[in-house]
Length: 191
Image: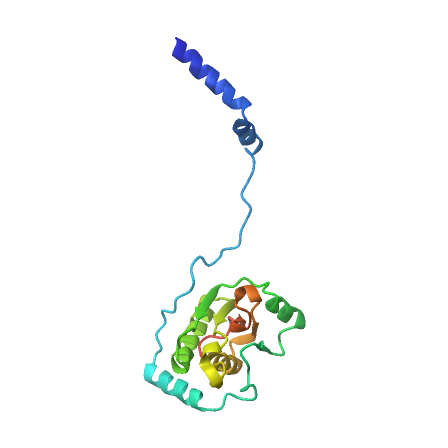
C-alpha cells in the first residue's frame, strides 16, 4: 500500500514541476515548415558520353588564351552576369543570400582535370534542378609566377556556358576570392 501512495504522489508532483507545465503549454505546438536542404555535398557521378572527346576539348581550351581577364590576381574578385539577371538578384547572389545546394572543390587538380570536373558538376547540378552552387578554385597562392591557374580557368569557362546566369566571388566566410557562387539556369540542360 505504501508503494501505491508513493507512485500517486510522484505523478501528482510531475504536473507541478517545470517539465509538466512546459508539456501542457506546448501541447498544441506544430513544427515550422522548412525548405529541404542538401545534407551532403554533391559528388559527381555523371560520366561523360564521350570521355575522349571531352578530354580533347578540355585540352584545347586549356591551351587557348583565356580571354581579356587573363591577368586575374589571387586577391581579385570574380564577377559576371548575363543581361537577364537584375542588379537586385546579382546583389543577392554576391551577399550569399541564395541557399548553396552543392559544392565542388577543385583544389589540387590540374587545369584539365578541373575542366572535366567542372563540366560534370555543372551538368549534374542542372539535371538535379539546383539553382545556386559554390565552386572552390583556390586563390592560386601556390602557383608561383603563373598566378591563379584554376581561378582563371573557372572564370573563362563559366562565362561560355549557357547554364551559367551569373557568378561572383564568395563572401569571406565561404572562401572569399578563392571561391565563387554560381547562379544556374535550370532550364538549360547539358554542356
